[in-house]
Image (tube, rainbow, N blue to C red; front, side, top):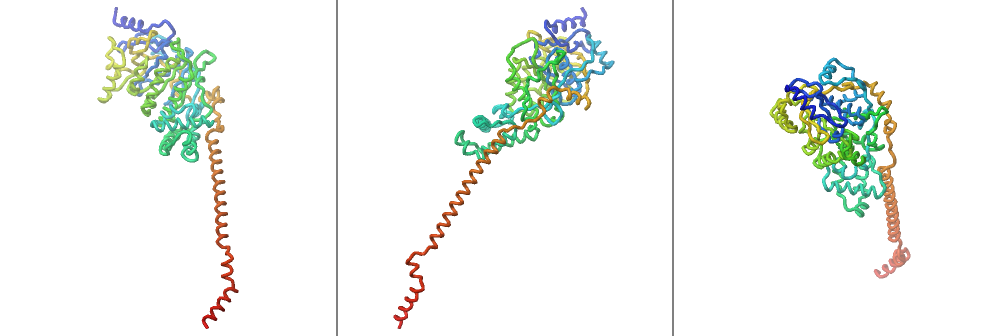
Length: 506
């Protein structure tokens, strides 16, 4: 048996599944693609999370696109972050190319240009289905972690939420939260202190500054109503294909705080909402987080702990998380350890730091008699990757250098006209894009403050009138003469006194 035949058998045995699967591409022996040595991913293990890594320009986004397409075809809904703006092309079929046909001939699968059902979402000013969440939905713990508050400041946030619950003050948007912060330090200070204890003005000032920081990054657009229902991410179209929700993030790359705030809230909401299902035949939803370092770089220690907990637990809800980044070291080790599928595109060894990173990346993959992993990582071409996934028993498959299939949809952005067509056909825009500003804590507290000030003014006027009356009464008493004084100062008395004095002097 030749080495190529041995390799074919090695891949075939390692990637054969009993249930449904997605074909990612074909294994490569050296520079040669071994036709029909298909690298398959079982649908059953897609909720075990994954990583797509590699240097800029090596094909990470196209791999993400291929996975999203094939999941959609299998009836699995997908949510993906479009940071660079080139994933909207999923809505149009690929125009095809001779090189694509050649690639698929080597792999041993047909190429069929296909368009997919997509929904364009937005958390900024860009057009799309508006994603929002209320401050109340975050809760005191998650909000404190997002704001990176101290233990004392977190305690104050918990008191504020308790006060609002006790007094039926809805916390919907950031202006509500800012208003209650101002209230507990000014007009409501005595009321809060009497019922919940003393609140430090310095601490509320620090919390307010953190709120303003998120507000400046566009958080005022994200916080509010109508809240997005995460069940709308799990829609299936009339042809049985999963809807691909594309979240446009091209205008918030420089606002990582908003991005990480949204991601954590979304994951927390999905975890709280979706029922437990354990290991089923397929996931309920797969979420791709492109440019994952934007989530982790700006995250505090407490926030990282929260993300790690969610990654560990959310799998049982039938949710798969896939992180897309340049280097595996961008992802915290505790999160990396939870990722069952790893697709590693080429890494560049320009510096000593790069070579060290390549060595560390190679250690994330199983050993192979066919590859020197460290060496192959620098030799991979565009659209090639080292792949290891979990088989149906949860065991890592053999490491395979893989020629990846091409996306069936367009590998480019949609035109403005095409985007408008997608938005016009959206079923969710009428549901979410009318902003609601109902009476909430802001309006209620303004009314309360107005009543407090009115009462204070009334008391001040009453006190002023009382003071005026007292002052007037005092002056009246001081100017009223007693009878003795009146006699002593009369003209008759004075003339008589002078008459007596005159006689005495004579």
